[in-house]
Length: 184
View (cartoon, rainbow, N blue to C red):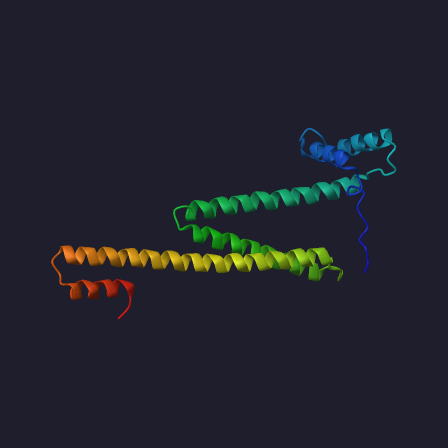
């Protein structure tokens, strides 16, 4: 199985990578300046690697793409949660399950379209995520059914009490209670 070569940025010590990320987020610092500053730090610490302008540019572009996706997903979540905020909790759970299911599918497709190398850990993590999603979806369905049954039972009880209070016979009250419950 072919191993992917780590990028020069992935090989950076964590503290220096954090400094690079901070520099790239600062709008006053150009990518050229960020590259020069990080290379100076690497030289000072006698680290064997140096960053190229193109590696910093690729990293910045990747980070911007990730940031854009995060901003977009937050906006979509805000929109849907705003819309579903007054809806039953199960609807928000369904939405989140579907979003994660879509992400898992897209990730699997990207892995399949790659160079044929599928990391076993990624495959395992994806399998576990799908298993947990399906379990959560089943739990949501079960919980919704319990809520629905409880609401119907409470409504039937109120119908029975109201019918008796209105002077209906026990048989008439039972008829209306069964109508609410949907049983004959």
